[in-house]
Every structure is written in C-alpha cells, then in structure tokens.
Image (cartoon, rainbow, N blue to C red; front, side, top):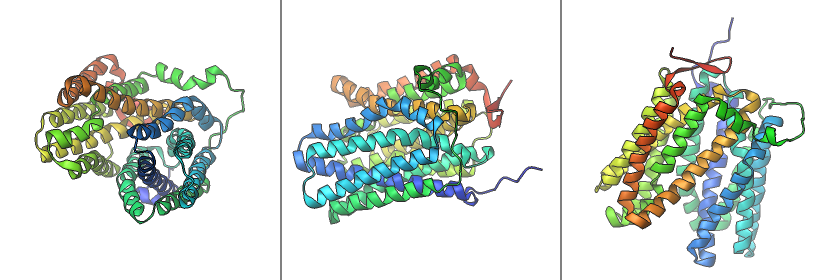
Length: 414
C-alpha cells in the first residue's frame, strides 16, 4: 500500500526548509546587488563599471558550468549548496568590513563579486538537481512552482529592502546579507537527504560534456531548452525599459520602477496559482502556448503608448514566462536520471543566463540601429516565429501529455 501524498506542500518539512533557505539567499543576493551598484557608482561615477559588475558575475558562471554540473552529480548536493552560500556569506562579510573601514576600492568590489559569481555557478544547477529528492514525484510540478515563486519574490523584495537599508547604512545592508547567506547555508546542510553518490571516476572530457550529450539525445529536453533559449533571446525587452519609460511613455523614474516590477508581479502571481493547480494535461502544448503568450505580450508592450497597458502587458509577460519555466523545469527533472541532473541543469542554467544576457544585448544593439520600438517589435515577431519553428522541429515535445513519471519519463499522447 502506497503512502498518501500530502495535499499541501507546507506539510513537506524538508521542502519548506529548502524553500526558506532559497528565499533567504535570493533576498540576500538582490539586496547585495543594490548596495554594490550604488557603492560602485559612488566610487567611480563611471557607467562602464556598473557593466563590469554584471560581467564579472557572468564570466565564472560561463566558465565553470561544466565543472559545476559534474560536481553536482559526483558529490553530496547539500554540501555543495551549503558551501556556495557560505562562500557568498564570507564575501558579504568582507564587503561589510571593507565598507565599515573605508578600504573597499573598485578592484576589491569586482574581485568580491567575481567570487560570489563563482559560488552561484555551483549553487544554481545543484539546487535544481536537489529539488526532486525533497518531494514525491506527483508533487514535483507544484514544488518547482513554489521554488520559482520564492525566487521571484526574493527578486522583488530584495532590491526594495536593500534600498531602504542602504539609506540607513551600507554597512547594515552587507551585514544583513551575510547573515541571510549563512542562515541559508545552515538550513541546507541540515537537510536529512542523502545527496547522489557515485564512484569517483576520473574527470574526463566525455564526462564533463555528458550533460550536453544527454540533451542532444533527448528530443523533449532539447526542444524545451531550445524553445526557451531562442524565444527569450529574440523577445527580451527589459534592457530597453528606461527608453520606454522616459521617451515613449513619459513616466519618469517611478514609471520605470513600475515597469521593472511588473514581470515579477505576474510571475509571482502565476507561480502561486501553479502551486495549487499544476498543469495536468497537454503539458507540451501548454509550453508552446505560454511562449506564444510571451511573444504576444511583448508585441502589445511594443505598440502601447499607455503606461497602464504597458504595465499590464509586462505582468502578462511575466505570468506566461512562469508557466513555461515551471513546465519546462518539471519536464527536464522527470526526463533526466538523477545521476545526470547536475550536469543537465548546469547546461540549462547556462542557456537561461546566456539567453537573458544576450537578449538584452540584442535589444540594445537593434535599438541603437533602428530605434527601441522596432527592436522590440522584431523580438516579439521573432519569438512567435520560434514557436512555430520548434512546433515542427520537436513533435515529441508537442505530444507530451502528463508529468506522470514512468521510469523517468512522462506519458505522451499516442
């Protein structure tokens, strides 16, 4: 007789502890981003240095992606996550001391942010790989949605708290970040869940690239990642929000804040809804509908001359994107053996980061050539074209019906 599945995720004590740890570290990360940005600009008054802060965080994520995935599949995942958060906590402690004693120069900030980026490179794929060990498979779609909700909420709340605390004292911001990172580390390391352990084979090129090879052989996983990668790469418009707020909507800084918050609001609302009502049928088609909705929302935003309509379009954009994130993340987890989840999630994380970063670059470059509105219009039409193309290229993804895992694979429509 099988054990009944709890009706609420709140009864899953391991998952709740995991969720609190994720929320703590996410809030700390985004509080820290606000403080570091203000400090860097106050020190140098050079916009290029703000770009360098983002670049030095992206570089270790790109360089360490294969190594991080291999670690996640060969060592205790709890310890990897806890160690990464502890390193971020130590880095936050250094920023606290450096700010308090006034020796925090530009180079020290960049070096510290690089260390935090390296820690995040190991943390992100390992968190995704650990999640399926915390809940029963039928609860996984709701758990993915709840985890995404915690991340999105942290992205919204973190900058607001960081900005308020920075007014009081920048030392206070970094000190609180240090505590939050260390609390998250402690909660994760105390989880009574055994991480995946395999024989300690020597590290080879084949094993490092095993995640990429697995994705290439699995049309459902490949289709889900490809669809998201190119849709976000073409459809991204967040980098151009300052132009829309000032020059098109005439809304000023407060309007820019509203526009930036809108996708997060939609994502959080949808993720909360998905924790209660996860997708149950025609999951593959739902992913395509969600990405198409993302493209249509981008199209409406590009053509809008009203702040209210633009905000609503971005809220819808965030909601559609969250449907895609939850469905895609659940499919990848269920279609990937536990021994490969670290490497596959590492590759997926790299593609997500790359699509966002390169998508912003694509939008900015096109806006410089042809203007902001045509650049966003092109991206919206491009995202819809990606949906049509991937529908034809990945029929296996279209046919996926349910999340129910049978030997690691969901049932599909005949």
